Length: 328
Image (cartoon, rainbow, N blue to C red):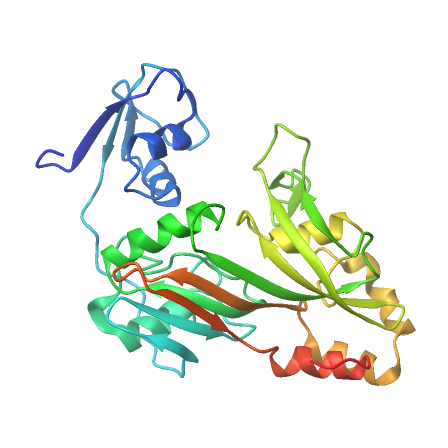
């Protein structure tokens, strides 16, 4: 790396294809999401020309240069509010995120996010690698998904955690599991959903299943933990990949959308009338998709210690399970 922060690499003969993939192979210390952000910000050149599309195709032998700016201080304002802290040390913090809390600022959500609360809590110790609007953020949960989330407090932790999340537990220690309430009983009761995902061409706010060879590879493993009457099943889901809305889209694609999912389960809204009245009331009170990130395990990025955290079903999902005759 020279004084300007420019880093140069030549695409290997076997690494042609998408620009972001070629960059990830050339600069393994930078996460793919970070490289995508650098591309969009105009910090990447191919054979001397600036390229702003992470999906741009590059040929073997292409000369790639990346200018990595110094990590900047987070711009979002500090907003003190109570955080459900499960674990905290000098390197990282694990949060049990409630439903309704947005993880990082975005259009329409400039304040009141987890990042705003983290800045107030951690001060200047958050990692800058995540970018100005996402300091410390290694992974995310949808606004209306509750559960466990780890945040890096320095760059060493950010790099170590990002590598584990990129591996998705295939060969490393990362472990993530979710509890989901779905319509109907999946067949088989336990199984794997493997279907590529991409942004929907009809509705850019949604993710859709696409044909093999398109989009991004996505794998979800599920296990039926209980049948709650004839209409609802409680599933445990584990991710082998971490795509946007992955569990929600995969289960909907199989005909078993999440209860309360207004985006991917709207066609099943009338099924609520078949539930017992207490369950109808509990579902109305839920007012979100019934998805909870209840298990998170990883190796501490500094010490290598195995860390594993569990979060019980939050009150709204637990109330729905009880109303359906089950035990949370």
